[in-house]
Image 1: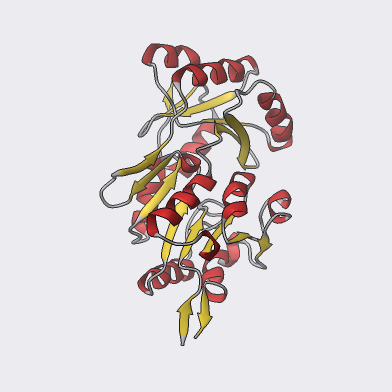
Image 2: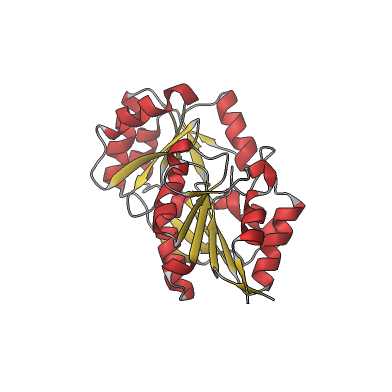
Length: 273
């Protein structure tokens, strides 16, 4: 008879649960829902905005809690009650934004339910298609922030994959101490607060559900997943993950196109009683 060994699994969404067609397989969805039915807690932690991820997890039949904006918002899926949030203070956000604009970058930034961009092109259209959300065009984001006094959750920059590391280094040179820069896809660079990462999502959820960190699993595919990989009891990378992440994690022999999360639940989440 099988018994749950790891009662909390926190998983990235894009590139981890979702396949390269940005859909979840029936096998993986069934494994997630069976794990929950058996008493496990399965939570998604994503860089997506909350308006983008809520319809996705609801479509799977998932209840409980979801973390968005890298951990900037943790919300009850059914009631939309915010359990935890962390925004970038307005003055800090303005400083970051002006630096990003000086670098001439394609910038996105986020309120709770809205996303704003300074660029409308094929990259923007691709982002909107994947996220399922329309961007609001603001040609100069810093001016928009000044006018609205918005304290956003994060900044995201769309770049050519070959330029991502160089852009990260250029951004990091002038970031305030409380901020960090990471990548969430080969073409996505992100800036947020050090205390609003996926690490926060895992530690919050473990405390919220009363589960020891050593009994948790975190699984992902990109460097923005590293904070939760490092703090979970078992940090896991899918086979298609960024090599730098794989160097710090237990690596599954399955990619996101091979039901990595479903296989993880089937082969690791339980133990024989």
